Length: 254
Image (cartoon, rainbow, N blue to C red; front, side, top):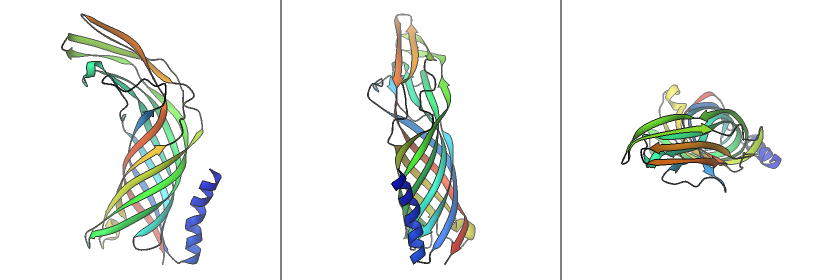
């Protein structure tokens, strides 16, 4: 991990000493969706059990970008994100009646990466792609889950409910390596405001399972002639999907 962080810091810096280039200082804000990729021993996904993206959270980041050409730049940055990861239970596969539980996990991500952009329609817009690698600090900040619901299916009126059984199962202050891929779009305008504004869509996978024990939810489903009770448990690695807006607040250099 130390070698990775050292490489991310020194590579752009060394290049800047040998070539006079332009630097951007950017801030970025947006919406973050997260889901769990379940590990062995988790309740398998099925028509009833779904590992889907949870409720959205927010993310905010800041970074320095070193332009090495009109199309290429390196980046060093930090990002904070709020992630709701867990599991949903669909009663007989019906989306209208669901029980769910989730862990709210904050990630503090330090990363470095490479961006490439081009002008498919000169004078109008720029599009590009990027890759990053980094390391993130995990911290579990909250719990979600529990309640009851009702709906109709082929058996008539169905009632369901759930209770969260587990507590804070994510290891406090654990580090996980990660990789990010994404695409960007921006205008190619003479306006200083528009020229510094861009949009990004990205996906990040974190490679270390931060769970000490399984998170779990006890549930029940009942109707006039049907009764089911059980426990769903899970642990695994987070996958993030993000959409945000970036703005270059400072630009300096040649």
